[in-house]
Amino acid sequence: MKRIIRYVVLLFLVLFFCALWIPKLTDMSKNSRLSADTVMSARFRCQPVNDRVLKVIRNIESPGGYLAVYWLETGFGEQDRRINPDDIVFLRKRWERAEGWGDYLNICQSVWDDLVYFPVAASSEISVSFEDSWMYDRTYKEDRGHEGTDIMPDKNERGVLPVVSMTDGVVEKKGWLELGGYRIGIRAPHGAYFYYAHLDSYSDLETGDEVKAGDVLGFMGDTGYGTDEGTMGKFPVHLHVGIYISSAGKEISVNPYPALKYTEEKIIDYEVR
Image 1 (cartoon, rainbow, N blue to C red):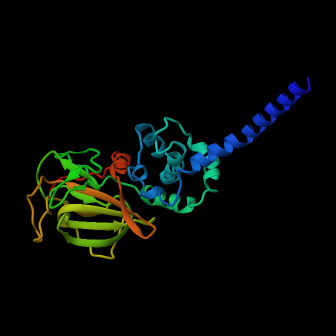
Image 2 (cartoon, one colour):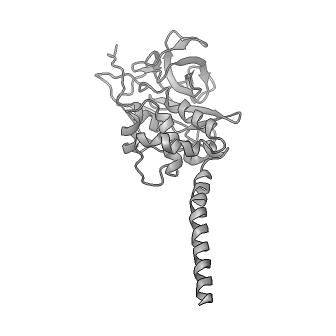
Image 3 (cartoon, helix red, strand yellow):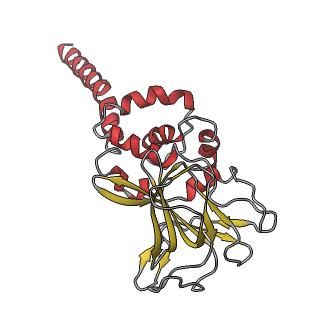
């Protein structure tokens, strides 16, 4: 009888400690998703957002705040889990205790919370399309991954479609790049850098000027892939959009395709000249 009692007590203790440690181990497993290297990871840089999540974040004030929690809770979208915006405050409290949460949240918000408009104005004569070409092969001079999204018009006409700023911000860079041709870079209020490349021409903007979301930056073209300024015709007319963030003193690119999907219904009307 004593032996049975001893086994029952031992079993109770085992179950008791399991009940204590399993939640802790689960939290440890989840917290491993957030580290100093999280924003450098391929999963974060892909910015995974499915159609269901797009519907959610289009109707909330801080899409970046929602996605910061959603990505950690779902393993960057690998788990098919619905998260109600009303639950974010509760879920966020757990992550706020994790080291690096503040920097991670700021970066998520820097990409998402300043987005207002799709970067190409609407036209009754020309339509555009885009696909997720993140890290597709590019071979000009050297093999590399495509760190952006190309927006393609259905008519190969340079200097016609206006390119508009997706965000408020400041013109940080303007001018010629061998790969990007005539490009302009806007630093948005929360810190992300929005890069618009292969322009045919610019609006009347200079480095340091402030812009508002929807302001025309220039016109879509086919410049680039040449050391000589003004090189054009090496590829079809299109707009290359890139988004860059700063982490631990390094500038890295993130996939702009989800941000473009998020803004594709927010297009400024424009009649082709």
